[in-house]
Image: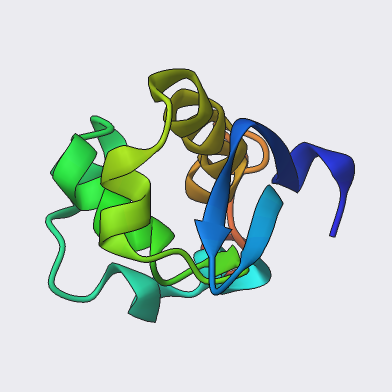
Length: 103
């Protein structure tokens, strides 16, 4: 995990007598299976409900929908920003391996 994947919350989340102060977007965000049941267009448009569901699948510690809905808006936006690199191609316009082999 890198610093770019980790968000320090402005208001920690209370869970089981502990405080969650940082959230990390995990490599599970790279797996297409984390998108199951979600409309990709909604995820790419940062639809709050879709992103909230996605965050329950790819965060450490694993967030719950209730925790996400109650977090500070600025913390949610930071998590969206941390998630973006997982959803975008590494270099727009470059050919993927399949395209290169078939030419």
